[in-house]
Length: 133
Image (cartoon, rainbow, N blue to C red; front, side, top):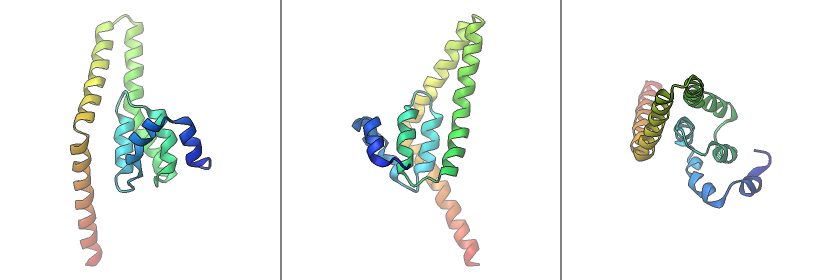
């Protein structure tokens, strides 16, 4: 965060930088970050360079990063273990499931974000009503 945008631009391609500009929307950035880090096959390193330029608090980033990476770490570890045991079918199944999950997240990303926005807005409306009473 201290090195700022010039450092990020030197280390991330302009194309990746533009693709990840969605992280600048403060209302959705934490949720989007969670799903991007959760999905297998995403450029996590480029995202981690850009996150400090957003309004995501460091504490929230650490929590999101730690939780969202658990499934990927587990599936990679399990796939590696069964691969070493010579069980190629299970390894292929694990990676196919990861690929299908990533593909579904990419295809339905707008619907997923809208769904969580509706939940967030509903909770906010309910909290506002409680505060008024």
